[in-house]
Length: 235
Ligand SMILES: Nc1ncnc2c1ncn2[C@@H]1O[C@H](COP(=O)(O)OP(=O)(O)OP(=O)(O)O)[C@@H](O)[C@H]1O
Ligand SMILES: [Mg+2]
Image (cartoon, rainbow, N blue to C red; front, side, top):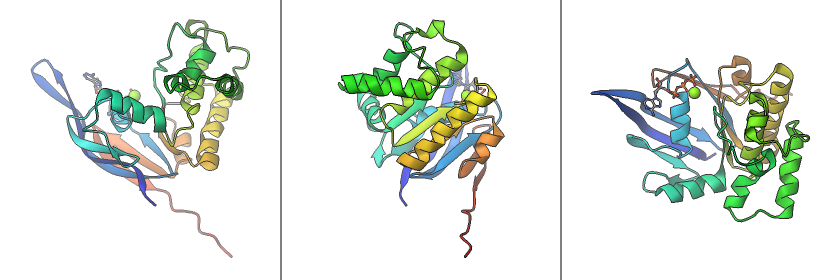
């Protein structure tokens, strides 16, 4: 199987006064298409920064990201946005909903950017909001929604362009157990039915265990990288 994502010697540094902070430190790995991978590690270890680099939201200080066989380094900001819009779903740790748009309008944004905001899109957006349990909150603005509700709008928005690869940063972090379980089910359904590759950052070890692979990050380095043995078929 081919790798839908390949990162080679990825490094991200931030300047802090006269010091240089290396937050992602020479990380390399490949992710096979259609698999699920959890990225775990202590707070501040570089998970969100790594995810942003992988999705082309941020640029590395050195090293490269190849997403869907496209090298992101040479691309302009607009070209990277276009790659994201075509192939990537992203659930931000901080949701990043547009405050002036309703829940429904927020979910429709990725397809509006593609110029595909038709009646069907609206119907699909409503359906996605219903699936995340927000069928009666479609016309609420983000400030009128609880944290967990905003998170579920962000998840519906990430699903709407039927991404080949879904990056989700703590997708169940703000949800109660029941809602969290339901969102988990939706995410893994996407993996099973649509063959969507999942890359989930999580502090929830139970969620991480459900993935095919767990990459543990510590101080910007890969601390461990464990792929689950495929269950052998016994006759
Ligand atoms: N733009 C930035 N400028 C300076 N430092 C930054 C910047 N972004 C992140 N950092 C630093 O990089 C480190 C890693 O941040 P990151 O958000 O990737 O951690 P994380 O593993 O996602 O943590 P958490 O589990 O708390 O979400 C932190 O110490 C943070 O302060
Ligand atoms: Mg984070």
